[in-house]
Length: 200
Image 1 (tube, helix red, strand yellow):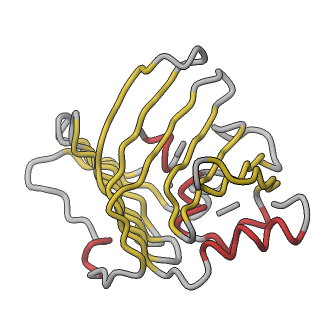
Image 2: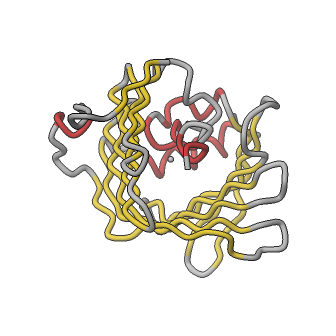
């Protein structure tokens, strides 16, 4: 699941209006919390994997991503360091955060001010009451060839990411809270006793 927010929850634009329209959905949002369902489909749209978890975002550049089912994994970023904790492996990996999230969906959520440096944005109109946007990376070499975002008013409801193999990762957000009061301690992680800590 690392690809979701590191190899995986900011966006260059085809015109100033398109970028502005998308930024409007994020305007006034300093923090974000939600539960999510994640599904992975192959190129034939066969479901390969399904997982659930919670997500907290504090702009800029801080997030907490916790997978709860079918296994427990945790990603925490405090603006300087990205922590990945795999409970089953009893292992914590620490990486410098700077530059690590470029061209990833994490940048979209944790620092949307960078939208105009990363993606070409193409509004796709409305479908089933949601406003859709397609995002094409400006630079090759990322982990996703295309991203799609769907909004219900100013709430992000769906994020889809398609890679070069045709696989699609789809996140649906539920119980969304805009601008919740998040404890700063949420974005500081202390490894549990006895786990292996790997510094990269």
